[in-house]
Amino acid sequence: QVQLVESGGGLVQAGGSLRLSCAASGGTVSSYFMGWFRRALGKEREFVAAISRSGGTTSYADSVKGRFLISRDNAKNTVYLQMNSLKPEDTAVYYCAARLPYESNYKYWGQGTQVTVSS
Image (cartoon, rainbow, N blue to C red; front, side, top):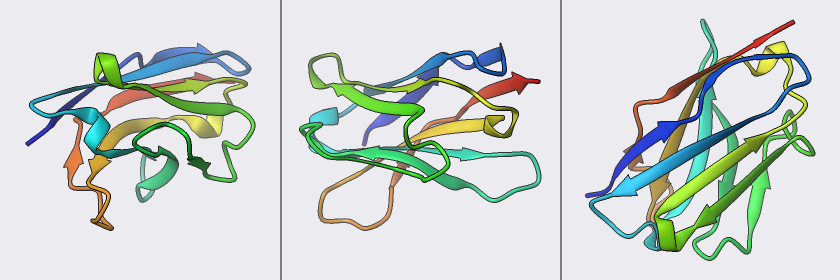
């Protein structure tokens, strides 16, 4: 069973950047599709970005496309989310998640990291 720990959240002004990291332990991250999700206060959790096991395929929510970049370093068992041109509406708790290729649902989740974007 893989454990995921996010880091890198914080307070940033609109237009700024942050890079989130998701460190995996207890398993080999290269075995998993990885994703980032977020939940804003009073809203449901939503998909942000995902990356295939090799990193060759990525997908993004329309709201972050062109501003966010998901990447992974399998040698370091770590997945990243580079967030640029941040907007106040990006304020949320960001979660890292992992799923096996043959599963449709993300099975493993981190505890989340808070991102707050001030206007």
